[in-house]
Image (tube, rainbow over all chains, first blue to last red; front, side):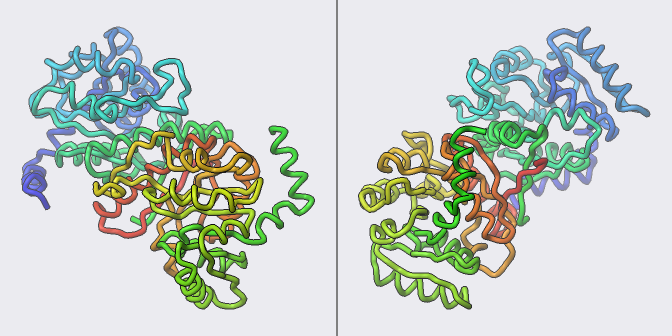
Length: 241
Length: 241
């Protein structure tokens, strides 16, 4: 156990986890993946702040998700930077082609010490090629690009890349692991908490942030598997753990 | 269904599959992955020709595997080129650093129209870096490199990358999919037959050969998962198909 992990467990005992999870901001949250995650987390009782470039669109999608989630679901909409400023945990669900620009836009809004979780996959569809292929990213992966554009002190993880957006938005059980890659123990714990909040999603420790280079690409492979097998919600499970 | 697939089904009806599977050559078969696959296929009743640079070593490992497989297991040893010349289906289980040289060596021995299945992963361990990382391969993947070094008419697939060698060699049930990537219907069918011959291994259509770029890398991720979770046989299952 690293010193970082030791202090994390102490922090959790002092309510760190609960404070971290007071709310989750989803940047680009009106897209498919964002809406799906918002719906599932709202159902789990987590307060969700849905970000969009257009605050009005964010508000209307948030209202729709709250209605679908039912009960005491708490989902609000906000412009992306406003959404980012309001939460200790910020999820990026933006297409790869917009990730860097969006991060520059929300950079100053992020709280010091915030956890930033990238779900983005650099699909070659970003440049008009196929969604079954990926682009080479200078930093190694979309998550490492996010880390490069994040302010110092922000803790970056990659997760939820392989969980089908359509499945999250449906009422079906999710059958997919969230492989979490990060160099920070708090970011790992936050991502794992969010994974466990979705029935059928299991948090798997995928090691260092650089391993997002592999995990992101698995999504492109799953798109191939969907096409070749005429299914819609292919996912993955790690076996033997 | 492509014309190729149509004729494949006809060919199968005429006993093509059975002829293809008369024997399987495993090049570099005295290594961990080769021994494990040989054991499982021998148990399934498939005749295995185990290749090695050293014919004597091949013979002694073949004898040991035949004993472990029991019953009427047929396992023989041979020098790599001799092994390659004797089978319509040839499996490459050599470390990445030796793949190109080995292919040059067996090139002329391969039968016209043979199926060549690469299981090789370009782990960065090949150049003294970690086994949790991969090398960039000029052709895109180890399997595409194999295709570049194979004689014209040889049908190349990638498969079995993610199946733990240690698990194959053990008496435990295998719990892992074989994701098959190829541009050739006969190569896909041969790889799928070999996958189905191992209890617990499922053949999954992973699309074109170029998708080996992703499937090979998953092995490096599974090595991380093994380390981080203190297990030995992490594997993957595709869900939702």
